Image (cartoon, rainbow, N blue to C red; front, side, top):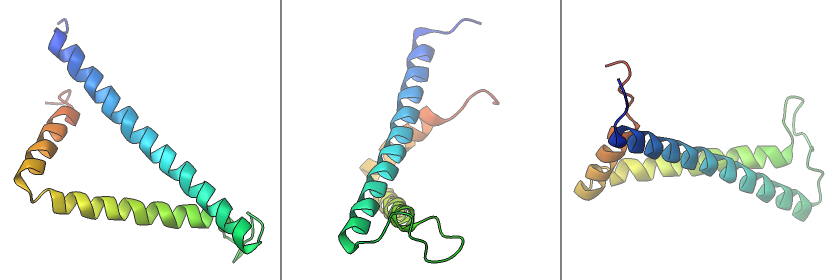
Length: 104
């Protein structure tokens, strides 16, 4: 009924990994928005310049496009790295740590 030390450490590793992933995504979005603002300043348009009626604004469009491009490249890179044996073992360890054993 009680948690062992290994269970507590496993939960701490899971929390730290999730926190790292979330902070990485937030930091990436923040940096991409700043790049979008710098691009708007460079070409001399306002940040909320809309190319169409439903557009979120030029700075946000640049941030969204850069984020999609970066995450797509990361996904492609991880798929290629999975074919290497050392990285495959590392990914299996990470998946084992992130696996939720509550429903099994």
